Image (cartoon, rainbow, N blue to C red):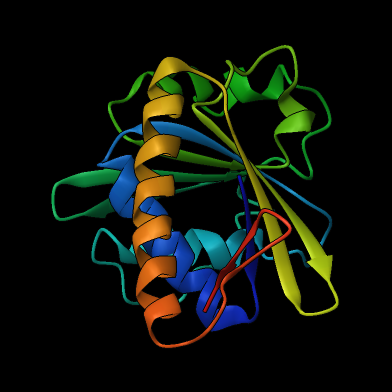
Length: 175
């Protein structure tokens, strides 16, 4: 599934919808170049659980835990990780074993140590905003993707009724 996000507001709104789809559980990989919007999308996911403040990328701390309305969300940024084994020293096994939402930016830096994700999102900078490609990596992820597709399709149908075509070349335009 591919979704076109025209601006930051659309990224946050899409992330919030994704956060609701996760229903408080799941491992999500966010991939994309620097500045692609991984942390912006994470802000939307956190909003789904009640977070209203700023969201900074945990580039130096590697992990930022959030406790939101009895919901735990872990945001990891592995960009500065020198070796996947470092995840052991920062409590990676505990984070991954927790019944929570875990969002990992730059998961390729933890390759060989990290388990397969439920969902893998790849963000790409395009002329008009960002293009997000989503893929399921587990049965749970497949269910999440189907639920997300359903939510996105109903949003597209509502927008089409307003006279705007939202589907072009198989890419969903999120506005």
